[in-house]
Amino acid sequence: MKKKAAVLCVAAVSLGLLASCGSTSVTENTVELKKNGKVIEYTVEDFSASYYDADELTEFVDAQVASYLEDSDATVKVTKNEVEEQTAWVTIEYDSTDTYADFTGTACFSGSVVQAQAAGYDFDVNFVSADDETGEEEESSVIEGTVSGASYLSGSEILEQDDLKVLIVGTAVDVIVPGTVRYVSADTAAITGKSTVTTTAEINSDVLVYVVYE
Image 1 (cartoon, one colour):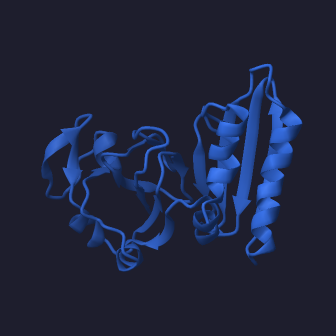
Image 2: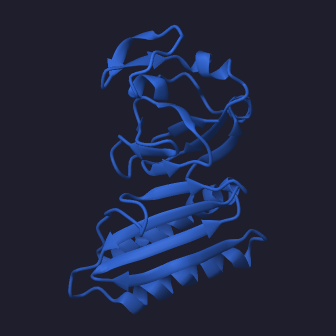
Image 3: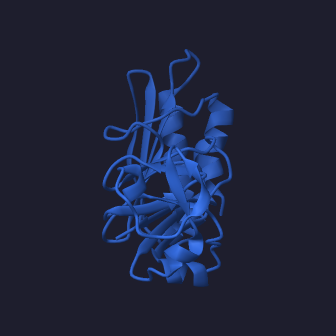
């Protein structure tokens, strides 16, 4: 179910919102995976135009979640849905990546790298190592080429490390994982901290952001 189109894209069309960034603790639209498997989605929209209606936005988002839950046993909670200082803040909590994917219509997977491959996710992409991005040397063969000075690693090398986990999100968002980031997809992401990744893809584009962590 492409409910995200209803909650965000339709809201953007009907209310004239422009995608922006943030939550109280992040600076861009972000998906956070918790240790218990829950997913937190943070979204903020510019709400400065005089014709925007804060009550309408709040009611709209709440109604979309309520409509989804009528036909689902999943748990989806709107934990923040308000307008502050001409900015609309929406934070939604999902009980799993499957629920996030179903509600938003966006691909989302968490599990081991082997499980991800078995689920049909293609690892035939280039990866960048956290060691490369911090200047440490990674003992691994690499594909010729660099991204911001870092060497490319092949997906096959990632799959050999079957003890690693991966979060895959099918949209250009920043990502927070419950562990230490080891590798990210070179074309769509860059490592910004121990557990944080920023997207380098065009916002609202159909992409896959791979975050491999331990």
